[in-house]
Length: 462
Image: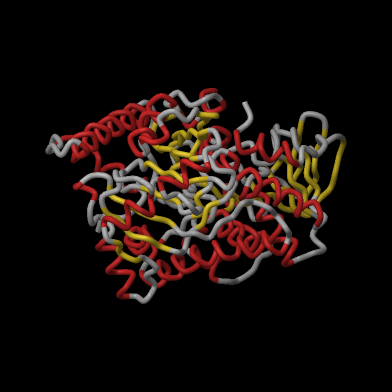
């Protein structure tokens, strides 16, 4: 099943790239045609126009996680404490600023290259949907203010309810440093620009194997690419392809629904722009309106995969469609009679730290990788491409010297402990947050287990 966003994008421009046949040669072969692969190819071409770059994609560009997300362009500012703990204060400040700059870079790129990605620079609201969530962002906001990098504004409860369109949001803060986008139109737009820049793209061309010797040979079903350097930009699919990465990420679903067009109802409830709204749960609810007058709502942390494999359920309608629909009606009673157009889910590659990591495969000098965006990749993949393009070109800059290039930090337990532990922690979080929604005191054991998932959460809690 193709993702809803990709189906919409293909209805406007359904041109598909050919599958690879025969032997081709390239300076750089990129495996994966999503945001990471396309942004890396584009940035390589911008910095070194004579590079011969080829992308191979096993399905269609954007058919993976890049075309199945909620389209929320967010930053790393709410994770400042974790950034500082992992990388130090100076690097944490640099990465927060870079993540905010990425939003504007993407907007400028779309404008310059006439990509109609429905990108709206209307910011984001982080809200509290229970009393227990009120104020969770205050410590990190205070710290951002102390360093002169705070973009958040505290809002009165009435203003939060008005701007979010729902009385369920009891409190919140607003940041203008965010956007929403049609991910399918963005990824297919990047594909179009990459082709115009001279990047060779082969869709429906899975990588079967590759040789690590120089030159590198990438083998596909009916062809091969002989190249000097290779970039693995496969995201959640890396864990199942490479055993050394099996425990570096947990592959978990983010599930979404989207309504039929209802612009008049959205106007009535107050969702008049492209602001994204996220609550303060560990596995957040997030929602936004679309440019064509629909409402999209999603929630992370539902289906966990065994051994990091991308299971068939990730290519089907969401098994949590009914629960998501009930949640949408809780947020917006006025939409109770509005039909649901589609539901879907996608694999999110959640790292131990909640941040992506980059490096050289098995220390090979010419094979690079980057993944682990942990459910926040629409904006940070632009930064990932800054890292990967700099590494491929052998540049000495803040990206190549930065700690994100040092590979994964930490590992999950082996199976079956990881899978069973994930389910236990997930269920504890659900019980804890259900108690908080009902203004009850959660069980102490659920509170303790919930803390184990803090790295994968949306925001730091000092």
